[in-house]
Length: 247
Ligand code: NDP
Ligand code: 8X3
Image 1 (cartoon, rainbow, N blue to C red):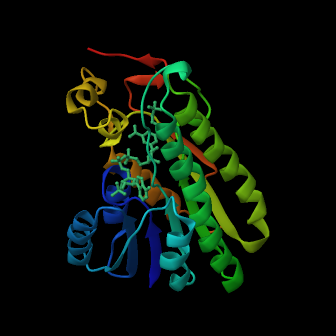
Image 2: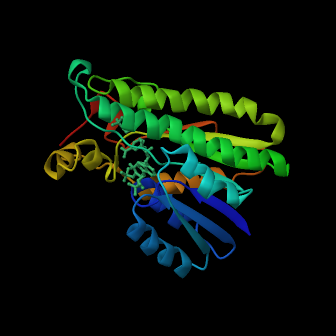
């Protein structure tokens, strides 16, 4: 049985990935802070014939990560997806609570989870596969996005360095770096302002969580000697952080 851990599975890319990877020979372990959503997703995963375990905790707390993840022991696959953008404004107007949320979740949370899971993989000596969800913001800093972009630059750097750290243990490390994906991402970024969030996707056909899940499925099912280090995925209407064609 293949054991797969997906963080941030209550919505968007994480939810779609957990569902895409669910199959009769898998155990899907899903995490997030919204218990009701985890419970609903667990039934959907089980309906696909997979075993499902839900872990309800906040990745910003190292103690919570240890409490919930250490008992898992080795998993075969980790998808480090939990993350967010909070706010979109010039640096002089930024809210330090938003900055903390992004750095604590996207960078420190990813590190806490990775430390526990990669250690169990190394100790078991059977390899593994870790996929980090970065962003085009990990190489293209844009106006109003200093801290989100910094957090995803960190994910990009961590992904490259940990690939080297885990090389001798036979653990594959890949990064998926999407452009615009229509999820709850913008609603979260704009603190619940749905109208402003909808505006981000007006006049374009963005990617869906399922598109990213399909790419992750493909990366995970390549032959053992092949690894995708870095995959940048955008909707056809987007050429980069500054270039979006709207109808
Ligand atoms: P969503 O807001 O739809 O999903 C985010 C997920 O992260 C939720 O399941 C949420 O669960 C979880 N999460 C957030 N904070 C925490 C926390 N402190 N502890 C545990 N889980 C947390 O957004 P996306 O699906 O779009 O985002 C997923 C990832 O993709 C993020 O890392 C994001 O930066 C990245 N990304 C998104 C893009 C986009 O355009 N949408 C483009 C490029 C990258 P809960 O709230 O229940 O805890
Ligand atoms: C999310 C995509 O362009 O808002 O990472 O940074 S973007």
